[in-house]
Image (cartoon, rainbow, N blue to C red):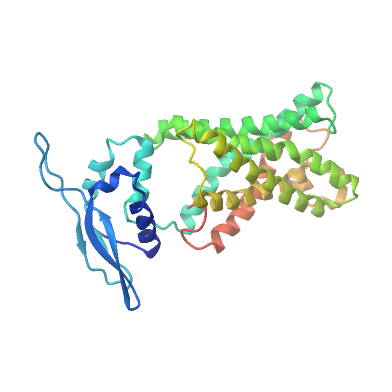
Length: 336
């Protein structure tokens, strides 16, 4: 099976090759060439030795063959070889090895939408659901929507919704599908990272709404303000907690330029979720064009209000993330 290696993948390989701390590159021996106009650059590929060691069986090697592409050569290897090489790896090492192997898979629009729906179900809906539930608890404790205690309580509800929803979803997915690539411990770490960022955006949401209403801003202006401020708060939380969690949690990747771009793109979609969450506030009256869909009326029960809140965040996230899925090139979308 021949797989085309793109220019981007080759550049990633070069960066890995220059990383002297990566012991995996001790086995890199084969050479391929990236053609770019009249120049030709030497590239090193991962090559597993075919020599038998004592007490070990030989492994099929990889063969380099010329590709029809003017920019790349192709790499030939068998699926069974990949499976044998990765089956015994630690799940995190197996995930890393996929990025090191110079074969790039492109995510189509359908795959992006499936992933978008997974994020909505596991994190975005639970975020709004948890925030609204926590606001009811805060009100029962005598807190007003202008109290710091109320802000923090709703932030905690947002945190619990995201962290719990993510962990439960992937625990159930592993149990149902038997997918060995899902490491529940690492997913718990990811849930803590995303939940901590959601605590930041969830905490500032009510103060921003209060400020907008004090300034006499309409529904659309308030929603846009929340998109900007809450999206920024989520992004800041992601970057901060990456620094704090990555040294102690193996499931959290340390900060780098690649996840900086991905965190920003995700935060934009999260900002849209918080913007649509303003639609639950019926105090905007007729200006709130989302009121017939997700408005939480005083006569509604607590469970219904929580479900509407979760639906509002899901709608906002779905709308903006779908736009990203359509316009962002392959390999550049965080959800890829």
